Image (cartoon, rainbow, N blue to C red; front, side, top):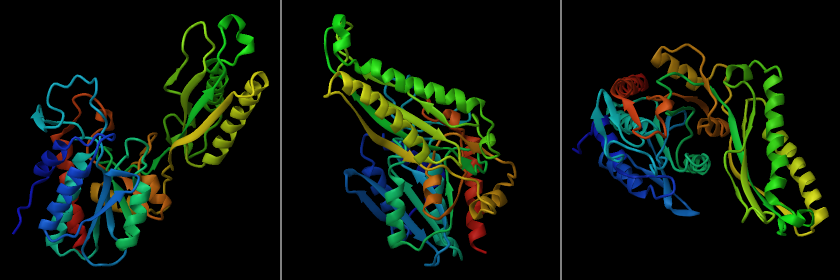
Length: 388
C-alpha cells in the first residue's frame, strides 16, 4: 500500500516547488497527480492551451454522482523578488509556533490539507463525493479558474458546495468584492516642450483619467451604502491606479503613457456600468488629443475580471462550513477570490481556510501551527461528515 503522507509532509512537498505565477507549476501538478494515483485516485490534468507550462489538476472520490463537496485552491504563489527573507522561502521552516515559507499561508497550507482529505476520503467509504480542484494564475487575476471549472464539468459529476480555502482564519467568509482592470495605453505626439501646444503629452492626458478615479472615489465615499455594501471595508466601489509609466525626457512631450485602471466593486454594482463610465471618459480625452494630432489615440484592453461573491440565501456551502466550524458570525472581504467564479458557474460557494490574509505575499510568510492544525481538524470533520 502506498504511503499516506501527513498534511505537514504534503505541505513540505508543495512549498518546495517554486510555483511563482510567471513560472511553471507543472512539477507540482505532476507530483500531486502521481501521489493521488498511488492511492487509486484518478487525477485529471488540464493543460492551459495558451500557456504550455501551466496546468490545473482536479479529482473526484466517492460515489460517481453529482453533489460533491469541492475543495478549491490555487497552486501559484507571488514572487520573492526584493523581499528580505530570513529562511529559504521554498523550504518549510518551523520556528516559534509557525511554519515559514512562500505559500504556507496563501495557499499551499490549505492545498496540503485538501490533498490529505481527498486521500483519507478514498479509504473512508464516503457516501457523498468529495472533489479537489487546484488552479493556476490566481495571483495574476484569477484567470486560471474559469477554464478549469469548465474542464471539470466535462469530466466529473458537478459538485454543489465549494469551499475555497483562501486564508480566513477558518472563518466562513460569504462575500467579497468583484474586481476588474483595464490596461490603458495613451499614445501622444512628441515635440519639444517649448512648443508643447503643438504636440500631445501622453502623461498629461492621462492625468484627467486618473483624476476621474479620484472624483469617483470621493463620490462613492459620501454616498449612502446599500445593506450589502455596508458589510465591506470600505463600503463602496474603489477606483485605483497603482502604477504609471511613460515619457522620455523632461523637455519632450511624452509619446507614451501606460497605467491600469483598477475597480473593486461591491456586490450589486455591475461591471458594465463602470466600464461604460470609464470608456466615456477615455473617448472624451481621446477626442481632445486627436484635435491636436490625428495619430494620437488611447488603447484600452481588459487585464483581469473577477466576479464578486454575493452572500447566498440559505447557501449550502455556507451551512456546511458553519456546521463544521461553529462560526455563525458574518464575514466579508474586499479582495477577490475564485469563489465568485464558482458561484457564477452555478455552485454554492464559501471561503474558509487556515491562516491570516495579513501574512499573504509578505517576506517571511507563515502560517501558525495552531491555524494549520485547525484546518486539519476541519478536514477530519468534513471526511467524517461525508461518511454519513
